[in-house]
Image 1 (tube, helix red, strand yellow):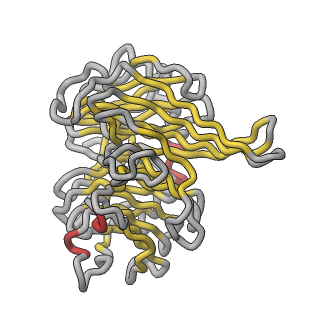
Image 2: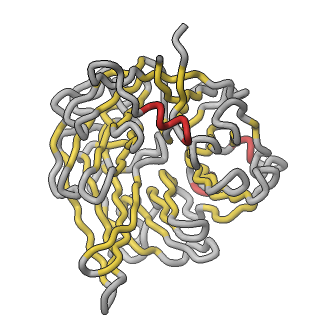
Length: 369
């Protein structure tokens, strides 16, 4: 049997070695023993050695040895209703500190934090909107970040009783209070975000001629079509200013079950979006698009992934993009123009070198020698 060399850390250098003739090394997923049958949708790799995963039934997992062992964490609010929560997002900073996001209607959407290696959890925030639903969490640091979701209503609109007039609620907090909504945008009829992989948001700081720019990209789908919304906050000049750019991405299918499910960036101009229709996992048409101008224009992949994709990530070690979904995974080495199949497994979310899926599935990407 061929040996598997894992990505990440020092071993990552092995991945870059070319086979004779300049051919890129063959890649595959090595299955991990997760110790759970929960459906996993949250995954965050800190450094390839420390990683956290999350999912249904209040499940949170952690590894500190690159996936050799996954330990089950204490269930947040386990003495109450924690076992009923669906943790679709997780972000971590080290082996002790992480935040998990539960997605669900109303107060079933919550944030919890641990600072002791998941032995105990603190409730940080609970969705107080009866019909609200949190889709994704991305944080700059341990106290400042963004939530994306579908709120029940917004009192700033002319009709405060209307549902889902705002597509997304982006909240920045100090000490985790939800009293300052920084960015929001009116939804089209039938437009929504997807909580399939905690990756409908991506964010990054950049240096510009005007100073520092914090940028947030948010991707949508639904029966009205798909859009990418870019928020820029320039804080290097006087006065500070914000720019919002909304771009339609018509290459994706239009239905309640389709659109863009994941967005990721390589740098400030190169981004990839993936998706499709999750009810048609084997349909490969209109499952990926790329941009090389910061999201102003999008082009459909010439040879797309071989099915619906719920997550995409850039690997700096491989100099390649990886996309994953419920009928497998794919790789692109030309910035999303063409994709080649990696496997036919059932996956939900990526944080390289790890991928997670239903029934406790966890894989780690590596090369075959």
